[in-house]
Length: 417
Ligand code: NAD
Image 1 (tube, helix red, strand yellow):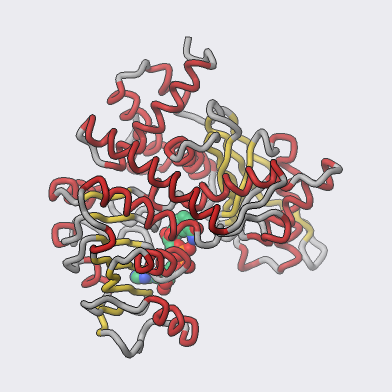
Image 2 (image 1 turned 120 degrees about the vertical axis):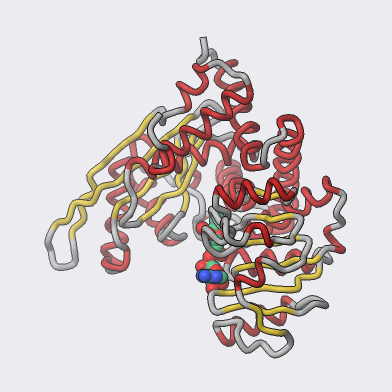
């Protein structure tokens, strides 16, 4: 195989290959998983506001549907290309199988720059993209969701377009919708909430009492602020939080509700009076029990990983730990809850949204939270068990759990002979 570090698709293939080998499965499993079962490249014609026509390129990848319809986000970004979409759909197969959701992995997107589009152009692009893929998606085939630069409004236009084509309301087509048209309560908080529950479950299995632990959170956006609040609600002492301008530190624990109020009022954490300032780099190296990177990729690297003192790192962000740092942390005995589980609260509540749409019966926020907690804890336990069985990182263990479940489904469906 070519140098996998250069290309996300080759990297994803390598992770699947390794998992198949460690599990001792037949090569047919890898042969079926190394590429999407179906991949579509579509032309998306959009009338610009000046009356001209621009044709964008869109994609949808359906990696593997052995466990159920494929599921995964739609990305509107200039860097979207075939290999990225394929790789991300493979990653969704792992995420969904690990969480025991009845889905395979999917992903899609349109190569475009949303900053160059008016609201009306964005709506036309969203509707045209759905028209282009309408025949191959559906609540029992492939269920999109928001991702980079897409949002609930875009999901609403898309579900409306699909419903018009079908001639019937089909809210189960897409998740991440506004609550007014079948979005789930608790979806916005799902990722931060799920991160804390996964991390708390690991702490439990390691004999660390989460309610007595100290926590540092990097990033105070949708994921980080919710995670800090929930960790604090569960009794943990959140001693540090940060945003892009820097962080706050209080050894006795921050009052997270006050910090959130301050941030809402000032649009920054800087200047919050009841804490000391701390840099983002110093925050990562604090002597805490739990570190939650929930901002950006590549924050823990070969340069700083050896100075991490936390016993558990819970990845809320995508890819905050480089492969070199991962190896260093593993050597040091620091347990890393990988992003594939750490931020899977979003797709799990997306699943709950689809269940509610299909059954036309809607749940309270408390019901959503309670069920999310159970799914995160179960996935964490399955991954931890694989980690113990094979002596691999939790990240690799996630692939082992997922590949074993998908292979089992393919086997009983008769795909492997
Ligand atoms: P957000 O934009 O709401 O918040 C990001 C936070 O990170 C902000 O507080 C920002 O100030 C801070 N930040 C930016 N640059 C920083 C830097 N250099 N150092 C420290 N902090 C910095 O984003 P979000 O939705 O909370 O997402 C955070 C991460 O989680 C991203 O990696 C995202 O891909 C991932 N994620 C989010 C979701 C979700 O449901 N929101 C789901 C899966 C993954």
